[in-house]
Length: 263
Image (cartoon, rainbow, N blue to C red):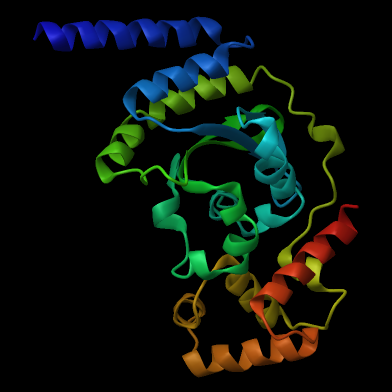
């Protein structure tokens, strides 16, 4: 009982430090220390989403040697394929996101994973969703790097249990911070990013997005309530119209299209 009391006293002291830091620069470090006491993690990022517009990088503790990959490259277009980004497009997104649950069935075989996510060296990720200033929906991501184990279900449950507290603290802090939403770039979509390379139909554009995100033919068929054969025909037509033969080429065209919109 004494050990439990001491642990609770220590954690409450940490929590008090976080509350006192709301609205000040030390807040994020204090919050990360509080969460790390419960479940260890390696890196922290906060991206602010404004519909389908280019997100904002609100905070990260990623080292300078890899921030260009994890943060800068993500903002150049791959964010459109991110399961966390997709979750924020829901009018009422869940307050706690788990990559293990959100990732499509062939996520690790997708071009997005091979050509972007894998280069981040992120092994696993969970996220707390909260509102920030300027109508921004923000996601505080906690990640583990390759070489460390994925989050165990017990650890995920612990973080889910403190999600309401984390959301409340983060909201109180980030509602007081400027998110510079006045200069939001023009909104885009996967279909728009590929529009300059071939005349895809709305259905083909929808299927293209699911392919890029890592859905298998079976998963696409289930999501769109169409037959496997129909999906295969659409995929063949997409590749023919875009004059490509691989998902890697499809991903490259997607990035080129986004770059044309956001030079």
